[in-house]
Length: 327
Image (cartoon, rainbow, N blue to C red; front, top):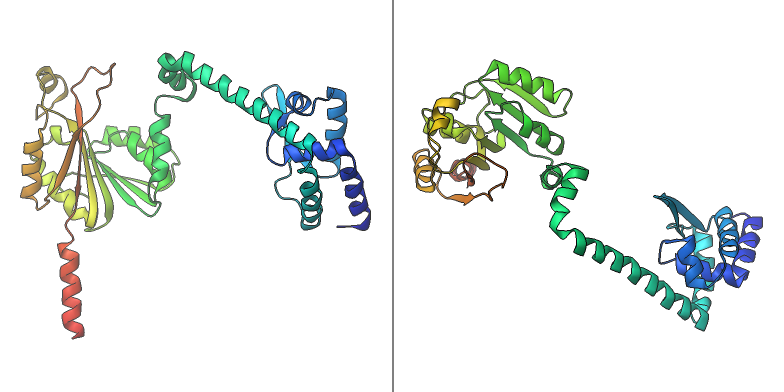
């Protein structure tokens, strides 16, 4: 720090009011009005000292709606930090500092109370309000950030690529496969320049994906259209690496018989035992089958999710063979 800057900062800390402001702003972010309440000072005085502290690099501020929030600069340069630590220790011991801290605590409690009152009054409409502000899929899209960015995901029967488009930015690659040229054309229009997304035309019973490519395979509302779902599941297993995961989302058994005629459904829902039997046929053992919560506005049958982990046997067999060769 330049010699002149040192003396300027020393002078700034010599004023008791500026010291009290910094002591409060070291821990909290407050508006001018809140600082006036905390220090029991007129706005003109607080504003004048804030301007001086800002000019010397002690504090920073940001706009929030119609207000401006002030706080101490989070990363002071080393010389300023050492200087402030010396001064802060002395300031914090005074009765005035303790009273300021008590008033700040009351201000923060009022903030919390305002939030609690809002949520108490809005609880019944909160879901609709959040959907109106951020969209109905905001919570689901946010959870995609939990995905491992190294994953290769297969969206098998991707349709218009709604799922593939959402997942792709969060993983290494998504391979979307569909047999319909019309669906893939719509998928490409939707996806545009979405990174990490590879759309391919192909039959789900003969996937255009090499063995062991996928970490995760998704069959979302796909199996109930398949004449031979076991062959589709077998292909998904082939494309998955040992230890990879298969996610099936589909309709539970239902009584809406018109869907077969209107939409070409082959299966009138898929029950847990039926799916487990198909999985067993292709060498997939344990399947976790869970009904999904019913959407109040949905007109279709209830859905389920089922997750299965691919056997590691092939991988273990290769390891044993390598061990025998080494021996």
